[in-house]
Length: 631
Image 1 (cartoon, rainbow, N blue to C red):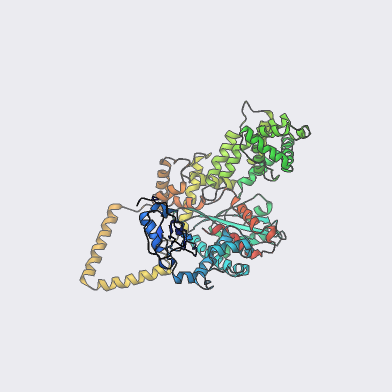
Image 2: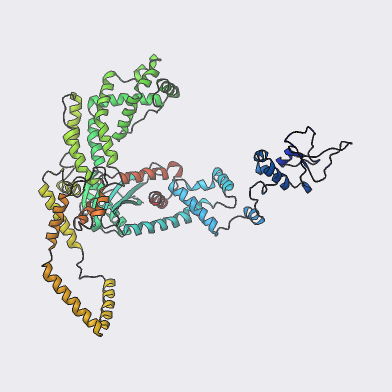
């Protein structure tokens, strides 16, 4: 019979069931109008009877799937009692029972979930109390009903310390690959809680596979006076705790504070003033020029006028839509950070047309708009600072070699960016002179610093001394450094105890072989081959001759592309330059800025927020460490 060919009415069972399949099946009524439920309902489409005793719908669903697939697709499996027949696996009794049983605290499932929650707290800088918040508990109950979330004290006193211990062991294992370390450190006072002072430390090194790695080691409570002596003691204790010798440091980068500079005068490595901090000091003097300061003040006043009025914000959004301008909010600067002032100016110039459209309709707000002369000044400031802002971001990288690029950057800033041009206004020339005179002061980069900058730039295959004032002097300095580093290594005859034991065992075995004729003949033929080889090859080259050969070969090779990774180049050429590669490993790990430590405090500020004022300083250190060192 064709589908839907009969108009005979079919009725559902007397007791209406929830399964949606009954929309397509029914029973006839007898002459008295009573439903004839004989356990074989009739399909409303093809009028065939299907056995379904006891209101079991499995056969009904099977019939629709085999003969009416379009109708079968309309049935929602979760609304039927024949889920298995619809192609969805039914839960077994054991599975259904398991859903009602809470995981034991010591079970693998519970421990895995505890680890996941601890990772979530650490990586995303969440407060411990989130595990007791109703929203989080509701989420976990829906996601894993068998899991009972432990209390906040469990995570703070047990899980986080255990995870810290595990990750610390992993970091210690990775640090063992480092030969030389560059370090950064900084001081910071929290805005949350009681305003506690902290000191951070990050280390940078080149691993055995020539990858630049960075680790945040400590963010320690520092209640003592921040004198040079206390800073030195604090840094020495940090390094000692991580089994890093001071003699393994190739450089320490900090800000220009006098206590920082004095603290590391006694360290057996070069102290570097942060390029970003130096640039900030130089540009801060530019921003204090009378005309520049006045223009920035008017821009700041405008931003404040919009930030305090939701109506102006609303109107600005409408104007942006009308003019098809990027829907960006205005930015308020931080006076001590020139980068934020630059971003405030950039955003104002970007939104200038929309801002004028908002203010022109209300005469009482005209005073907020900077004067034309101020806008001209802001445009000149923006044009000058834009490339400097880009350089700061590039040299703040933690995963790329930066110190070797500092000399080329300074050369470009001094000889190109800060040189007077004919079209420059008097104000632009004044700003350039202020930056150049301050940034290139002798006190900012001492002779020792410049020497290290020259060596690191020379040993970088992207530059190879192309920015050196005197290439011969740099070649000699690099050769002296390579010679010194080679001399520090143990001679081949001075083997460690393990090697000596192995040598003793092999000697004993050799003596046994010599007692036989074959062993004796082997000794005689080996000695003869060695004499013949020595006679044909002549005297072995000295270390200085090897170094000279390496240096001439290194200089003969073309420089690689400026966008290439210098460490990848050294990885493939380390066999050719065994002595020069030691210099590269030592100097290419030093960071050009102390931004890595400043990033630590940015994260710590989220961890030790005003809402978490009771967080202990030990937990601050552990959570900060985990945030930066967990994958």
